[in-house]
Image (cartoon, rainbow, N blue to C red; front, side, top):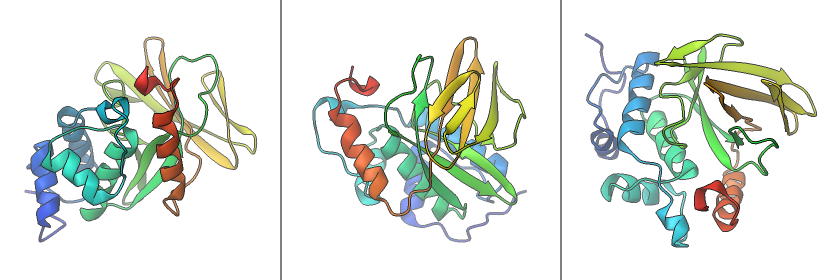
Length: 224
């Protein structure tokens, strides 16, 4: 039997675990991380009702907790990944927030970094976690090993990385950015998912800027 890494769980964390229906071990390993992500994806919906209604959004954890846990709502990428990242930190996982782009079958790179993903460490291994897209996101964390194909059901997910000052490319498509930029590729039929993380969130300001920008743009996919 696995032992829990956290001897005493905070009430708020326990309420979050109840919200996503997770009652397994909390030992900090990779399988537990995958189970937490799958539970979150199957219970907390991607939804943009507040964006459609022009309701001001907050990325403060108490506000996200009230919306998603207490009121049992969903949210969009910045909300969902922020709360998931908070829960993982509370459970002892080292988590780094990344700004990103979400790219699926478009001919041109999407404008602005308007997505968020999480890098989660388990021992010496690094994983990319994303609960902020919906049904087309990989259900389980993607291990950051170059060229390793990772089956997830009928889909295959992998990680490819290009370090260049001009940007990065994956599967014949190019993205722009600065510095050393990793990318993630998920393949299902002709569907391509490409994330271009561009830097850790320190301080929180970059996320607030994108959060304010994204809901206000009519062309954003989330409010079409």
